Amino acid sequence: MIDFISKRTWGPTPKYPTVLSIKPCKPGKLISIAGPCAIENEKQIKKIASILAKAGCGYIRGGAYRAGTYPPDNFGLDRNLMTMFCNVAKNYGLKSIIEILDIRQLDTILADVLQVGARHMQDYALLTELSKQKKPVILKRNMGATLDEFLGAAEYLVRGGKRNVMLCERGSSTHMNHVRWDLSISLIATIKQMTGLPILVDASHGTGRWDLVAPMTRAGIAAGADGYIAEVHPEPNKSLSDADQAIPLVCYPALHKRIQRIWLNR
Ligand code: PEP
Ligand code: MN
Image (tube, rainbow, N blue to C red; front, side):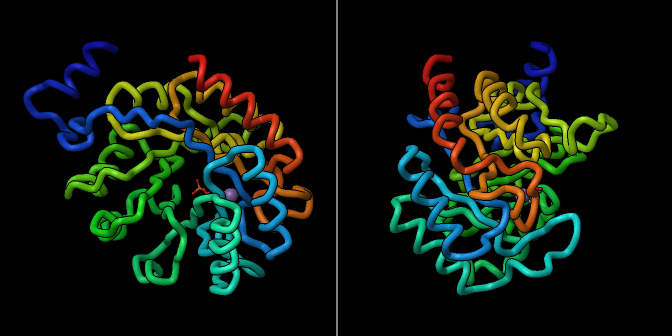
């Protein structure tokens, strides 16, 4: 392991000079991100935002432009919903996060943070354009991407000098059939050793199972993750997408408290 890392970091032809040369970031705060898979309506967002804010969560996430396995039908692509989402977030003192699929959407997304989803991780044209704008970007690992491919994609974002980039582990395709995706805890620990960028654990997409979100988020934080993403919903069984992996909103405050304790004590 030491050889592997030292070759990559200090060998004669380092593959990722910029990512690796970033000074290790030590966010003074756990990066906590939660929210629904999709922005559905104002009532849903207000309810979620109020609980998240009260629990001490920092960011609310919500899908508008979505890249799901199947094309979205009755949600997303609604600018009024997106504006409402960002306004509600602001009113509750939360930062907002929305996924971007295409650089032409940049002006329509008022969110504080842009997410590049797993399916767009290697959209190099998008990454290059995003590297030129100011908003923080979350880059999710594609479900089939290796460490090299993930860091190579991150390099597109940071090579021009952009530093407000967060990486996110969200699981791989797997032959295992007890989960939808298989979260890699070892990847989180490796990224902590290799780069100075914050790494987030997304155990919602990283398992596809709501009952595994808490234990796998705790594992990711214990392994060194700087923060987490969890999908929550007031009524998960009515969620318009990713219903199986959303934790009930009422469970969120206890989950956050426990994760924070692990982060503080590790
Ligand atoms: C999401 O965050 O809702 C999402 C679709 O994530 P991923 O790109 O990891 O599948
Ligand atoms: Mn989702």
